[in-house]
Length: 176
Image 1 (spheres, one colour):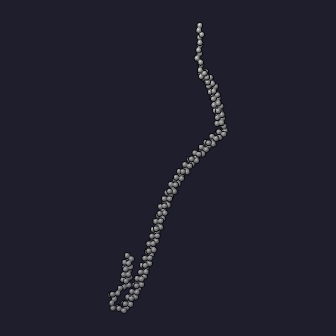
Image 2 (cartoon, rainbow, N blue to C red):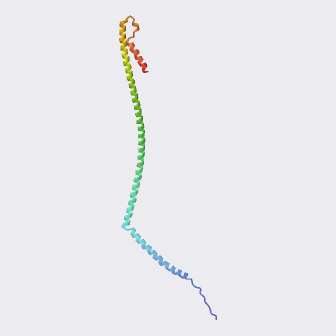
Image 3 (cartoon, rainbow, N blue to C red):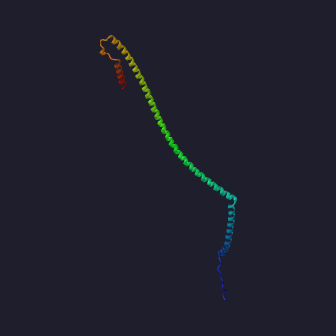
């Protein structure tokens, strides 16, 4: 009989190593879950601590204060915009009134100049009237002396009323 050789194929180490790894995954997974659970407990304890609650309360108060300040800022900006609108309107009114005042002042100066001019003309007319009155008196005296001297021709002389009427008409003609 001939020798029989039984040749076994070598078993790769990988397959055997995979079994080892498969066996190790479960404990490793349990270890990771346990660590995460411990961390979760620590986080829960810290999250429920007094300091954390005070911090949350302070944060909430800060947020509320911030919201209140934002609201007040918006109201202040609205009031400012309204006030600026009123100020612009008032400025336009001031400019308009200033222009009107300047026009009134200019018109007042023109009227003052006109009054002074008219007063000068009145004075001139008074002087002319005085001069005419003086001339009239001279003519009356002359007329009286002439009528006394020449009583023979009374139709050529004018009465004082006629002389006054003629002088008045001449004065009006000068003024026109």
